[in-house]
Length: 391
Image (cartoon, rainbow, N blue to C red; front, side, top):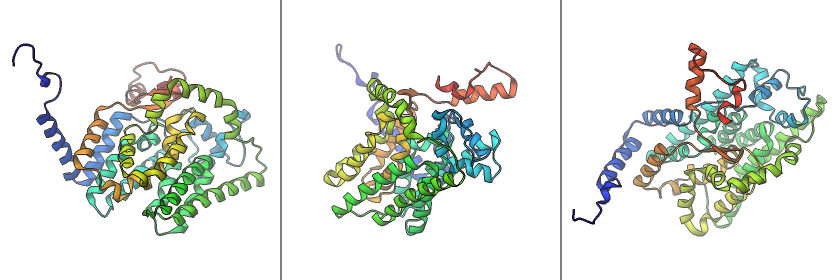
């Protein structure tokens, strides 16, 4: 090398070495047995993210003691009672103790992940199924129900369940009913966005695996579920305020301020590496507009909430599933090298999940310290261990 000239390989990975690395990653993605690939993704997710529970899970547990009586004297907590189905299931199954209640929700977290893996593995093209798996694990929604085990675990499972049976309108309707009884607001925004997008795509003569009729019944089921839930509340004379609307009136100013101060990490954390897939889908031009417009519409809800990644991950999931994760036409546009680069980025980038406007890192280290404390008495834990990783 002549004096005065810099060798770029001193600062960057040699391009040949980089391509060899991508070839190895490509082998892992497309040549490993599927169960090994899925196991690897789950293991890496656990190391990257850890496992914790939503800090107010104890309040939801109090509903499970008797789901026909409001246990909350504090009006700000009434909104939790509207997430009624999972405490009711815990009551029916006698999973009312702290550990059993947590285990029940963890079961639904696993069921959500395993159901998606099963659906991806049944893809007509095995390669496209593996690409869908990598995309799924790169999205915050894949880990939200582990980072905060809780009601979202049940909500996400109910959102995915009908898509496993695209030929059965009844399953979509019944799943929608359960979703409306579990979390009406998230279910309403999620199914409305998907329905609008599919109608707009239909106008453009674009067809998807899931029909407008299928998603209409899912949407109607959510509405019916809400009416059934209100009927239960009226029958048992359960006294409640407006729930999330009441809560929104108290927090919307703080939510807007957080969004203004931290809009960059909030928007990034909404989809994280999933934004790469969104940009890729935008290459379709005019055909991508129904998806992009409805996704933008969901983004407009972010300033109204304070657990930004969690809410957006949940309400955008059906839209992302239909247009990205199960769309063979889109998955077929992703080259092996491209998905290998995405996988590499997912491996090396830290977990980013935004709560109260600020990124929260992995809870894996907290898991280790907590276990060491419980097993051997090592370390001193704070009194409020529920919120410990999120102080």
